Length: 87
Image (cartoon, rainbow, N blue to C red; front, side):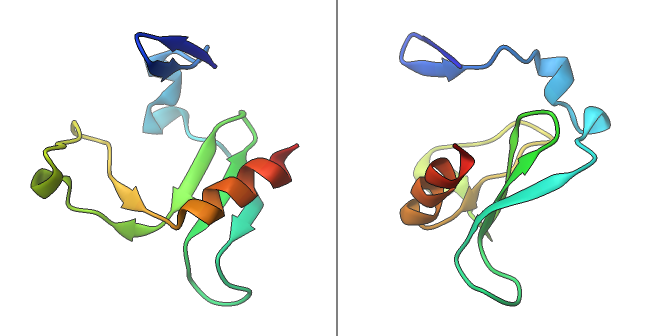
């Protein structure tokens, strides 16, 4: 990851991030429960992160994602735990 104008950037191109180039394997990094369906963070086999969370309607917050992207909400501690577990 690199930083440009205060934004994180990846070495991965936008084309590589598109759904048609999806990862084939997910490794659990952190979950907010031990069973069932709940916010979860996964590491993919191509070095990206997949987040399962609650749908977040961004228009009320002034954020409109482009087609093909979604906003999800997860507990901040879950993301911190995923970072700790990834190392």
